[in-house]
Image (tube, rainbow, N blue to C red; front, side):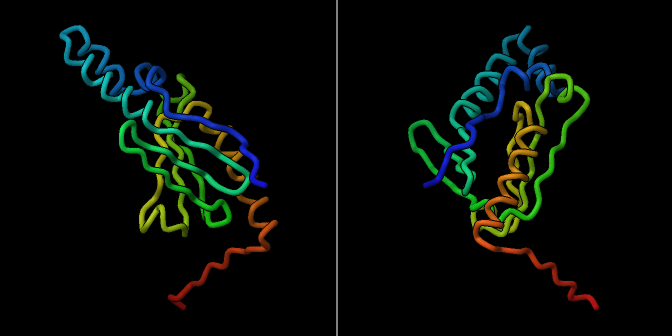
Length: 146
């Protein structure tokens, strides 16, 4: 039976203080425009939930029309975290996932403004390794240029 490891979502409050766009939004709040931007960002973050289990990363989006996508962890090829100086101060980051799963298509899946992004990345790496071992799956890189 699959075991849920952690649930998380993007952080609006940390985005406001941990990014240049957030600070710009706070400055725009003085004239009222920033309130609209912050509200839209908050709705987007509230409408997106991530659940990390020992087998999958489950992504649920939407408020009225809901959508659920899943990435099988054994299909994850690479996980990285990017963060600016302000992001580090607010302890948020963007987690980028490269996967052979159809959910990501040809591009990368980017989880933006995630609190404790480095810790979640490490947990994700450990779970990916465990999922591969349980399924006895190995990744093989082919160099077709030679």
